[in-house]
Every structure is written in C-alpha cells, then in structure tokens.
Amino acid sequence: MMISQKLKVAFSTLIVVLFATTTFAQTNSDTMSKNYDQGFRLGIGVNAGYVFQNPYDLALGADARLQYDLSKRYSVTLTTGFSNLFVSGKKNDLGFIPVKLGFKAFVWNDQFYIMGEGGAAFAVTNHYDKNSLLLAPSIGYASKSIDISLRYEHYANFPKLNDNGTIGKGVGQLGIRVAYGFEL
Image (cartoon, rainbow, N blue to C red; front, side):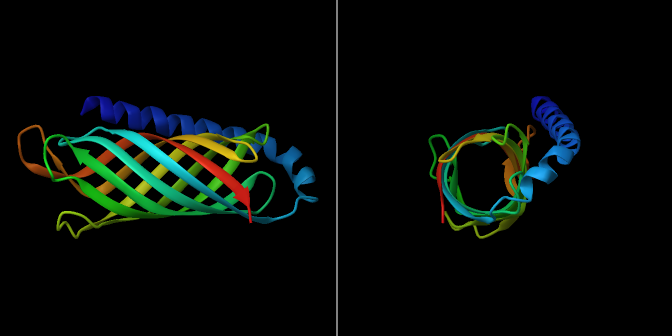
C-alpha cells in the first residue's frame, strides 16, 4: 500500500515538472504552430499493466484513440476500448469499457509528450454493474505512426481487497500502451 502512494507522488511530481517545461517551450511553438494544419488522427493500441491492489494481478486491454491536433504541440483526445483486471485462479475478473477525454502536450522534439485523461469506466463482466471515475496521467513518445506511453490509471470506485480482509474502493495500475496511429 505504501509503494502505491509513493508511486502516485513520484508520478504527480513528474507531471508537474513536465508541465513547467511546456510553459518555457511555448514561445518557440507559437511561431511554428501558425503554419500547422489541424486535423484528426486515429490510434489503435494494446496495453498491459500491473495492478497495485488485491485481488487483481494484471491488466490487459485494447483501445482506439481519436486525436484532434489543435496545433503542432497540443491535442485533445477521446479514448475508448476494453480493459480487463485479472484475478488469478478465479473467474471474478473485472472487465470494463473506459471512456476518457484527454489533453496531450508535446514537450520535447515534437515527439515526447505528457497527457492527462479523465472519464469513466463502465464495468461489463461477471454481473458487476458499477461504474467508476477514471483518471490517467501519462508520458509517452509518438512518431508519425507509433505511439508508446507509460501511464498510471486510477479507478476510484472499483472494489479492492483491503489488508484486513474488508472490501474497499480505489484500484490503481501502472501500464504501458503501444499503438499504431494514422491521419484521417
């Protein structure tokens, strides 16, 4: 449990530092973005992650991300797909459909970015019909066709098993996403 809190603090600190870097890069990017064509991109990705709370062991999923480029450095995103939190040896896995809106800012060489997403996770398996608030900060690298990112994803309302055996709320995972993207 303590490791999870430390990872949250470390990841939050990294996001703040990267946002601060973005403010210094704005002067240069404003002149470059005047000649940039805005447009849509679509990315199809797979993701895997380590879940920090019991009884979950692993997270796997696939998604589609629609991205609209506001400028060369800034984009808004809409992501959905299917993810599953696996429980070893049991059939009580938690499958859900995430729906997230996000903001992506390229902070270095027009390829390295930070992104924040927020939305909802709609549970769809094993007669579990609850939904959850979903928050997901990430860092990544994107080229014309490949997008690789590392993110922390937190599901505020999904059940977890506390150390004392009671049921609590709040599940987090650290995951990696690999995607193929193209312009529409």
